[in-house]
Length: 352
Ligand code: ADP
Ligand code: MG
Image (tube, rainbow, N blue to C red; front, top):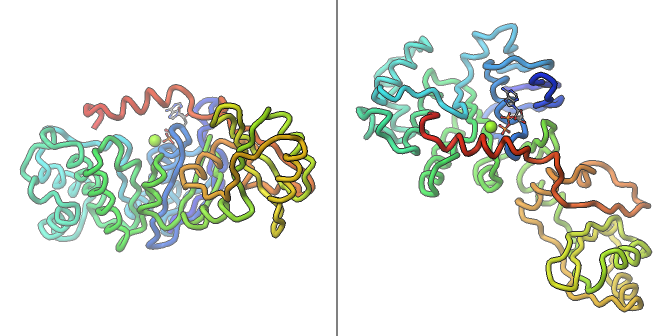
């Protein structure tokens, strides 16, 4: 239904989207996940024809967004990061306006009241948009995207700035929409895509770093071959000892969690139980193991792993003979400071 091929976008010399390709099947709810500044809004603006790409192709339902913009755009409903709501209109006036703008052919009354029912804004349809709460404004934003019954809904961070109750309500609206539409939803919040989406694409620094179901993302990273290990002693000394244990694929230092000790993530080769060799090696070096447990990473941690590890530990093939030591300290390439400002700005009601 949606096909993106080798999409690249540069703002001046800044590479915001770096050669991204993915497809979204009909009826799928796809989560587009990434930290602030990852390139989500840029990609969505290109998908919807609001922004031109530097290179690459986008097609919606078989129509190229550049060659057939009118046909392609008819298939898309878009909730941008800052929805273009007219504050001095009532909800109904605004939806009427959008209906005319999109030159919708379906029966006006029937179409608009069905949309209002779906996103639950029937009760406020005669109220001025400026007087609505942020949650209701967001519903109106989703409603305008639904006008004309487009096959694909593209929602850019639909729950940003909402309170927990509103978030739950908007999520259930989106899930419901997923029954009749193809939905692409961006978020920088992992639980959100986990709760709503069937498939997740993770982007970071403009690059696609993972694409899978939320369950498989979990499985690919948390398995019995991975341990979290807490050892009393100096990091360098412990790493040197672990380096000599055969069957270890890599060691990832997590730093100091408890005074006098260092935590590590250790991954073993498939079907190799390295626990006894690790115990023996550390014991003979007089480095006591304080804890050893199999690792069950939360989706949160998986997200951090795939977005922070420049080495791409979980994406790239790791040479089986070699122990790789990966630094998990956040690096300068993540979350450029301007995004913090951007996020603050999006909380501002005047942006809606
Ligand atoms: P996200 O939606 O994932 O937070 P964006 O697509 O908004 O990310 O931004 C991706 C990167 O491109 C960021 O580093 C951002 O600062 C930069 N960027 C976004 N819009 C512009 C613009 N109009 N001009 C220059 N840089 C931009
Ligand atoms: Mg954004």
